[in-house]
Picture (spheres, rainbow, N blue to C red):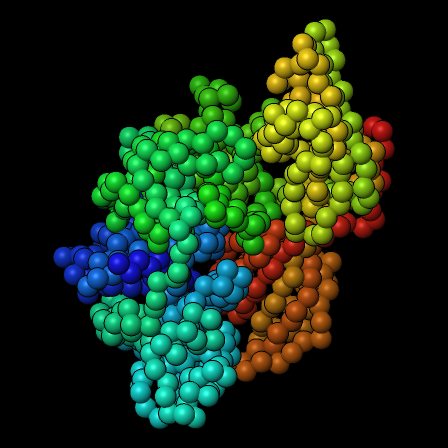
Length: 614
């Protein structure tokens, strides 16, 4: 059976969930057509989603058509929940990018397009809301070609001479076939798979116009990837069901997964047995005894998994492109202890790893990292609904990070009475945005392999803080090079203390660099507002290239500090981000300008050398 995972992505309010609903209805998998504004859509299963009319969590629906099964993954469209969308991209075979017929390509649409490029996901485009005034097909097609790719081809007149000529210009192989007058579906399938061709369709999901024709083309122009015989799976989501069971959502990428199979852990800890395999469609699920390659499902009984884990033959995911740059302090009600709240917050962190829940020992409070104010409101509601207590949040602060400029060795020694452990770590700077890498170069005749695994576990389990400002460290390779244990007095906890001390001692010996979030931005403003925009950017300690003139606006490209940019970004209508930062949500719409910000962490000036004392 053909099994294909297809994700639906869009800028918020482009009609993405409505299109999902229409596809389910047109294929006979849904008997009644729901609507987002009526709060009865099939995939908006949470009360908060129905109240707000936006998708917050990715959902799955199964479309059974002929001898094929399609797993339709509906993703959030709001920029504050883009991390959820990015995690889902890792398991997609194809994507459907929905574009509003009245708004065209928006800033977040471009961010989604960059993510699709990064993860090499083939893409179909559906231009929605063509029934509304102002939706001009020719203008929209030119917009798609200019903003996304020249390979965006209108499939409305598929088979005509003009159509064949247009797709032939997208790829050399297609051009050869065109000259031979022999372009077939197989040729187009191959070009789509290689991201050389992006079919575009136009219609109205709400009125079911063009939906059936679009889906017929998707079925015809997609193929199931080839999978190996060795078991592999990619984890993309962690959640809980109504009974509190932990659900690990994954896609099987090789072999077969069966109930009672033991899933291997990617972090050198014992594997765990699968109790149940569930194939979800909306709120309901079907329990199956096994899942073949290509299946998108959820398993119970497994507790060690994290989003992005590769199981078996599948490799782990790299660092996410989208990351937050704001941290918030969680204010608890008097009747709730910090210990209890921290345990509850860890559950939410497992579901969304980029929350990065941290217990701040210096200030005695819990801190979380978020993308924006909409996510803040959702998190507050989620805590009240699931855990039964209300929280408030302090003012968001900028997230800084630290790294080192040179290679150093850190030594940790722990030897109280009847305890002994010694750890030698090599701390080496790595390239920007590479994160932390832990490995071992220690020989087993110096330190037993079990102790080495334990040390690596202790390196993974903690957020290590720098010595300049107490910010998390990043962009380093930390290698275990040596260690010692006592045959009688060494216990597991001894190596925990020795490992932490080795990291700390190494950081205090190194030349430390403080990193701050810096935005690479693209600002589009009307010509009459260009001077004011340039003045504002300079006032915020930003810099920019000479302005460029586009069709109906002036475009400024440059960089600015996140701290200075924060107040200004609140007054923009759209903001998008990439690595080392998460998306900001607007609070005061400004129709005159559109800004796209691309944050990264850059060294502050000057570089600060660490000393023996703080």
